[in-house]
Length: 89
Image (cartoon, rainbow, N blue to C red; front, side, top):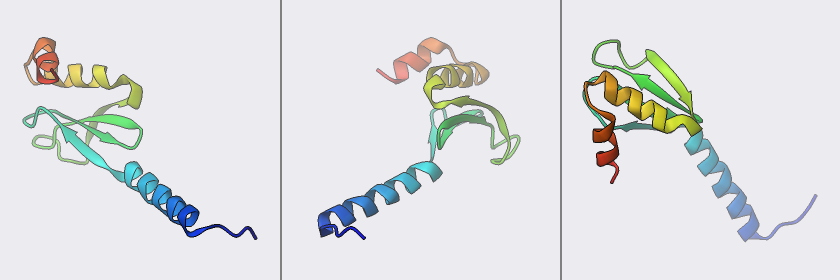
């Protein structure tokens, strides 16, 4: 068995904790009313908790396709993609 210094052991523990936290983290993003995009693990989910409930996922995208997820959410809420771009400036 390999002996490690306390710094290495602590770093490994922190990495495991952060990894577990990132897998289960839910981040609801703008807009708050109507349809909402949230990130769960490596995917973005489109939900409308007010109408369908929090457990129903209307659509999902991979993590890399976040711009498409936000644009789709804004259009479903009656907003323009230009408003989306302005929100992130």
